[in-house]
Length: 380
Image (tube, rainbow, N blue to C red; front, side):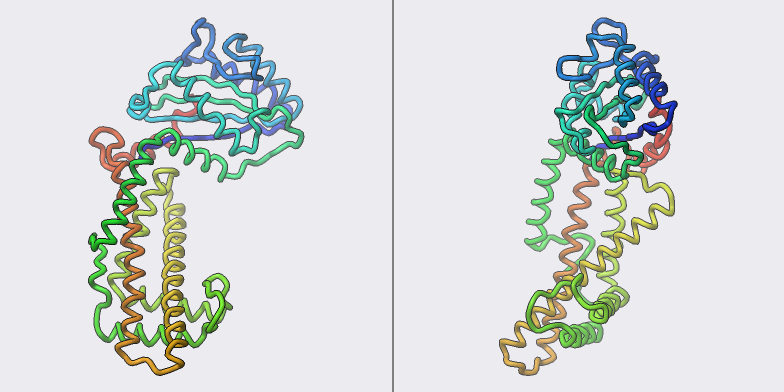
């Protein structure tokens, strides 16, 4: 999947220097070298201060004065940057200032909605900078009727904007990805095998017997009726479920291998949208993925135990034979491995779309490019 870089900042509305700094910022994006000019060749600003006041028909100074006045009213003036790799912008047909202006007009709604600004209250201006390997848009936007000063933007907002821009910009690729996702599911349903083999369930008969006994022991701790969900269980019962999950992970090499692949692919996918270059960030996200994997295993374990309880009720509390217990253990592990197999195939489908990031660049090379350019050049 192709990459879009998105950043969003603002100067504190209560800082006495903010109105002047916002004025200067408008002048900077409108006139700096490699700022592509409008048809009249005077400045590069486009956008709308209001529906009847396009920035292309007034001087950049008039736009800057308008923004400064809003700043003096302590309205938040957001500064955003949308940047592409040169090869991606070329594929999208973004070759001129006119094309980039149309792109901004087509996607400004995303910036407004994610920042909780009604389109009827939105004012904005932008400029296209034809910069080296990262051509980019500067967009300045605001809420014309804002009453309450905001001094913080949750990181989720720019993250959500970046993801939505990727989805909307590369819509055809996303459609192709979801078609491949459906195909992957169908293939797995037909017995398709990847590096997670679901024909191998347990490492030994002894391990199978132990897993079966643990499942049947767990059923005694759960209610015989009503909804059974991991999040709703009492702490002591959760602890028993966690013990079963830990046993399976520690002793079943097939499951451990599947979870490791799942975590690795999730980290690679996450890197398409945000940087995991710092070891601390990478470790934190790996831990999150492992916790998610454990919770999924716990949910599937509970599903199997509910099937046991249902069958037990049907048999009116008759004792299960050893073979019957092992059958439930095998089915439980088959569902768990099947879940990870599906998600590994789907993840690989997404990463396959990213391997053509730049000509023949590998994923590692693409990531190196991202790290190299992470914080350099996007303000210019």
